[in-house]
Image (tube, rainbow, N blue to C red):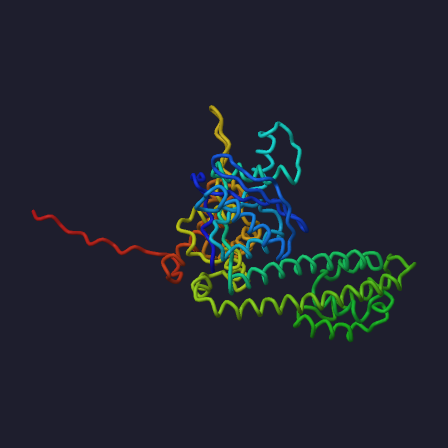
Length: 420
């Protein structure tokens, strides 16, 4: 893992060259300036090796021209288009920083009292933000951490794809068989088996309840049987579903089921690869010692954070997750504390789903959660507090290099009686 701590960069010193880039999908806009205001013209370069080399040669030439001793390269953190350039610059003697797009938007209106956005204007605004010391340094995951990040991103995309396919299938089934979901819940493997073999209500209505019930019993491991099969068959025989274009809808359902099978096989392959990768990362065993944290959550957190040792304090890692608190107060009015949500959204999502089982009756955060809700705290706010506490525990475990031991009880102090 290579990279710098995610923290605010201090005001740029004299003798530092600021090189900024407005990132684009095909063409980038570069700009170089110094702390004293001397600068170059805005220039264009592409997302190719020749383009990156042109940018680097321009930066080096500007450093020599202005006799600078350090180089800070900054960009606006929008989308994945900056990653190839960041990786290209990692082995060079530069300090790579990024700026918040919200800061860029607000500062550009301050500069010329205009909300206008142009490729020539943006890199100059980014340079002003860096000069003010309002940029954040960049952590670039490498090795297994980078691999886990890519696996986690791929899993998120395909889970979203699976949800979209299930929604499409539910809508199509409703058209031809609205009563289906009154008997069986959509999305299960048993439902998929029935729709794959008997796509239309007519096929389901012609089945024998015992034959269908036996198939359902085997597929659902005994949870469903003849009773549910009989209800489904009777509902199919009296359905109010549409009849026109039935064959086209049935063909669409069959295609969606085939897509679902492919997507779920790929998700299972990703999850297996996550488990194998975690075996090569020593700190993963520490995280898995926390009751309630599974392979998917641990792999996702390592992929999002990278090297936990780069974060010296809990406040730094809270900012990375966007779980740091803020309030809006004025005069006698004191605002409520909220999380900023300015960090990595996927990291917050992972912590959210990891915290859910921990607040259950046998979860390690159950008492803490109940204590918060017992003070009339809203349940969602209490859950966010659990997420923050969980992230703090993870940071402490990896900082101290020790397993999670549950409730910690400090040793009782020995009482020494005073002499009479």
